[in-house]
Amino acid sequence: MLLEYILDIVVPIIIHLLEAMGVFIIFFSAVKAFFQYARRIFDFSDESIKINFARALALGLEFKMGAEILKTLLVRTLDEMLILASVVIIRIILTFVIHWEIKSETVYHQQS
Image 1 (cartoon, rainbow, N blue to C red):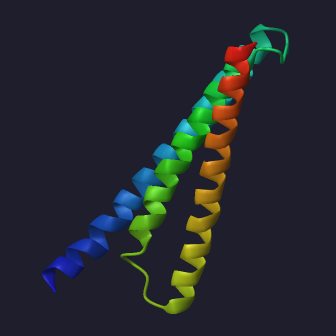
Image 2 (tube, rainbow, N blue to C red):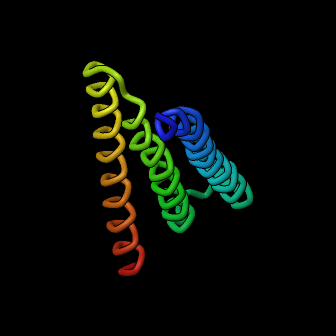
């Protein structure tokens, strides 16, 4: 009973912190990538900016996925669980696609 009460108070705070960290990482890396492109007068031939931005997106999604996994502790109905599972699956797919893109860009960048 006490543990359930503590979890109901602490877990939402941790969830919001993880989501905020993910948003901050994505926002900061997007601004950083934009300014790096702006310094190069929007010359998109530099693949290292794209690779670094993709890595930051993957990291931000990992934080957001951690928050989604913690939300499973707060789920009360099957409908909430299905929605949560759908969100987690979409984020997992996005993370795998981003990792695949990073790997392919890194290999292509090294061969050039």
